[in-house]
Image (cartoon, rainbow, N blue to C red; front, side, top):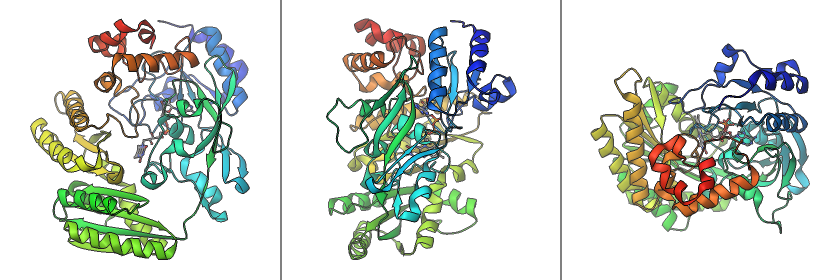
Length: 483
Ligand SMILES: Cc1cc2nc3c(=O)[nH]c(=O)nc-3n(C[C@H](O)[C@H](O)[C@H](O)COP(=O)(O)OP(=O)(O)OC[C@H]3O[C@@H](n4cnc5c(N)ncnc54)[C@H](O)[C@@H]3O)c2cc1C
């Protein structure tokens, strides 16, 4: 479908200051992809609103012109959610960066969607609080993007993902009306539409204000580093720690490729270079409890075959141990022309078998894989290393990525742990869900967005985006065809 972009631009320029409308192709090119660089498409037009009123006015204008829109936060998403791959207006929230209300008495803060994740903790740390969900991209990704993706992170093992920390949302619906979802309290008697919105990947509207739960910073934090001669023994340590009833704040594993990439990246040797895997375990809480848990975890790691053990007790040393893990994606970027991040979840007990399958598939497909992952949650991130200059490289990468997800599903896992479905995985959704499930999701989406204008074509499979594979669900339920 082709839209009247000049008429839309003329009307948008009446609603927003000059700097709020971007129409020059050179400037629009900076929005041609998100963190999924395999797919690129330059949007026809972008706006950068600064207030809820401006977002509402923009969406009312889109509604009047019948033009779809795509929300974008910082563009770090790894599933192509903020990609404008069908004609649509891009609505960028990066100028919505205000902390709107700080309510420390009730342990909450309300922010605009473009506020960067780590700024929330920075704003409240002086008062002894923090915001728990901490994606590794936390210094750049936005709270709006975190809400849309229901993002996870290192601390989500103990504290839960984004949906456990959002108390209320102000949302602009696709017709430009403004609504509140959730009441800002821990419990609400209404149907949980707040929960439905979180993780909906920009398909139900645009979040313009988000009330977050704040936690008291723990009295004491220790980080353990255990290194192993095999990946299986690192996996066994994770199993043993959880089986013993310990609940670390985080448990993360890096394989040998990642260990060396990180050491080279920082020019240090914090992680033993010859280890097959290192396991990082963070324990937090009251000092006596942390000390006892750390000793227990050390014994369990030794029992699982840990070769070396190191414990960091002061904040600077803890930060040194985490630094490599938090920068692992960037470090791997230095050892390969490019890479694709896969994201799947498996039951923790299946980690060894799926990691072995990934190694086998990597050899079969002739593409190296680096593994760095949220081991405590069973959330895998195989990084498939490749050069786009190689023949048929992108298709081979996609094939290997898909084969890995099939292994995750075979053990009762899922095709995404935290990076969402977006454009990248929409054609795999019917591997997991029956047509009736997809139909229900389509109906919910339609209740928010009857004209299918919010991030169209994303998440749910359609014949337009996925060809024949989406036919079955559409035959059963005509409304899904819209999406
Ligand atoms: C190096 C690196 C490490 C990462 N580590 C993690 C990790 O540990 N855990 C994790 O979960 N993810 C991780 N990610 C993925 C990514 O950072 C998260 O998905 C993040 O939440 C995306 O935020 P963003 O602001 O960049 O969103 P964008 O990429 O701009 O958008 C993501 C989706 O959100 C929608 N959206 C954006 N803003 C709004 C809004 N206000 N209202 C409605 N919809 C909106 C968009 O339409 C899109 O569908 C990582 C990415 C990178 C590059």
